[in-house]
Image (cartoon, rainbow, N blue to C red; front, top):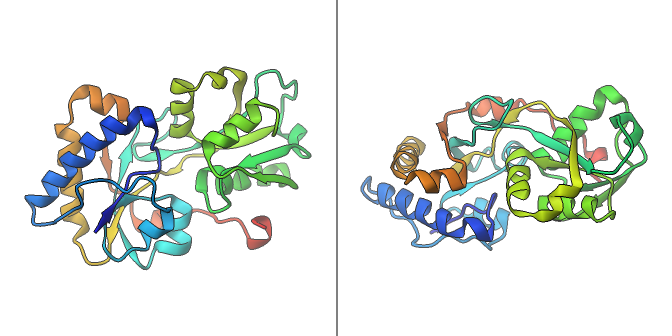
Length: 251
């Protein structure tokens, strides 16, 4: 068995995430589902997502629709109450340096674009789609390995622009002093947020009920720390309908 909630994992959230998981685990157990005592927060993402014994995890919309849709089941999508987004949805904050004089995305055609991974919805696919009306895609692309590093690269002048998951950006603003050197130039359109998933053999409705009950049971300070507002059912078809960049744009 394995479980993880690594997508928004930070040291400052470890205690809250562990309590959240123990509450989910207890609710699963009373519904007849065994789950691991601890979260595998440092395990490789795809190693967890593709494990046939994965009880619970959180994935990104692009990996779900391109690689996981036939092997895992959607449970539900946490609602983080993000401004300008329907419940369970998110968008990307397109960030630049605070002192960058360029005022329009058109001015960034030749900029250094830092992205976490090319299979990321918020860090890659969302801004690719957003830029289509502008008629260009970044030629100078730098893989950073994570949203936090992308933001740091822009703040430190190693890159000029990045596209950050709105919830991650919220956490960066909350916990990272370098965020004062960044500003948002635009937001992408909202898309379905990062869904919770389970393996092909468990009943996703039972898992949904366990998670929803856990969110309702969390102490208010823990729910506030994790920005959890609720759990939303977003159809699989909605996730699959989001555009994916062509292969030529991801190399």
